[in-house]
Image (cartoon, rainbow, N blue to C red):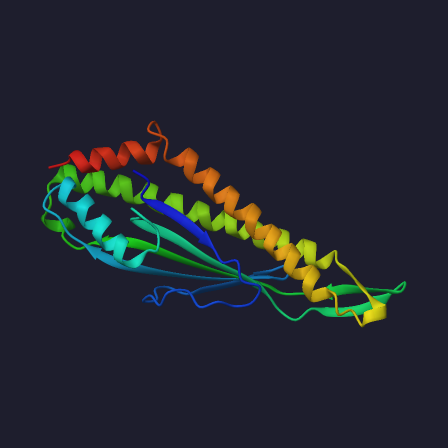
Length: 210
C-alpha cells in the first residue's frame, strides 16, 4: 500500500490547486525564497484499526488527487518579476523572488478518546511518523525552491533583444528544477514505503489494533 504522495506544480506562473479548507498559515523569507505553508484536515473514524484505515482511504481519496493517499504534501513553485541590469553587454539578474506554496493534508481522528489504549498508542506513533514523512516532502520542495533561486540569479540575457529571452530561459530552468524535485519526491516515497520501513510497520500495527 502506498498511502502518501507529493505533487509539484509544473506551471511557470501561479496555479490554483484544489480548493481545500485552510489551517495554520506560516510565511517565511530567506535569500529571495518566500515560503507559504498551510494545513488542512479531513475527518476519519473507526472502532478498530481496520475501520480507521478504511476511513482514511475513503477520506483521503475524496480530498487528495492521488490513488490510495491518506495524507499529502501539495506544492506550487513560481517566481516574481526579476530586477535586471546590464553589465559587460549582458543582461544579469540582480534580484528575484521565488515563491513556494506548501499545503499539507492530514487525517484527523475525532474518536480517539473512546478508543482502546492500544489503538490510541498505535495511532499516535503512526501520526508522528506520518507528519515527519510529509514534512520531509516539504523540505525537498524547499531545496528545489532554493536551487531555482540560485539558477535564476546566475542567468544572463541577450541585450540585443532587450533581455526578452529571460522568460524562455527562466521557464526552462523552472521545468528542469520541477522534474528534479519530482524525482527526489518519488525516490523518497520509494524508500519510505518499503515493506521494512518504519512507517509501513506502524501502519500495519495500527491496522491490527483493536
